[in-house]
Image (tube, rainbow over all chains, first blue to last red; front, top):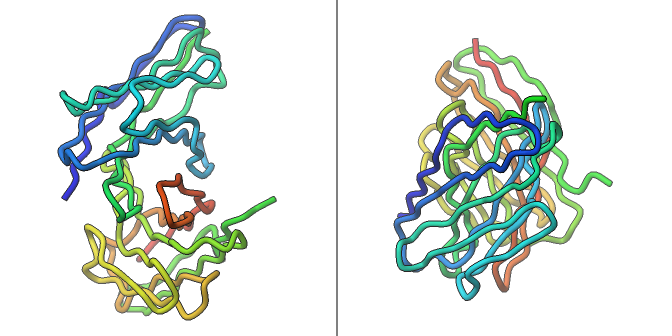
Length: 112
Length: 113
């Protein structure tokens, strides 16, 4: 089955700096890669996703890049703000299964 | 505008008890999922369902079963709770017919003593 690895497990940045979280996946058939943000005590929420026919996608301060050859994808957050502090999960889904395999999460802390 | 509802936010159960965790969605989604979330391990899939009365094992089904008698409801059952099942349990749902992201419930934190 699919295996998703995520790094780093914790990340501390100063407000205004950029943050990058990286994930690799094992199943070359995977074709959907969402990112979820989970604030303390709350449910994970989808913040951005990318499909395998696209190399990059942006939404304001958030961008995701995908390298299918290398089987890795990354989340980029620019101009970080304190409200970006949360745990971020990457995930991958293959074929018709619709089920997602998640990474182990990255705790991002944005300091003032 | 809560769309995926888990019946309990916190539960404390005794070892050996049979435990039911309920999840209801009002978005007419075909797919429903149960994950457990543990620190350092991320979200791991226990069971999922594509349709009423259909179920598939995920990555860690041992010690669990599920029931889906109605489209909107997906129940997770711990047949005989053990302390290693102490965890946060998250339900999610999604559309079928393509590739869609999940909508998660708020989670049930289960403690088995």
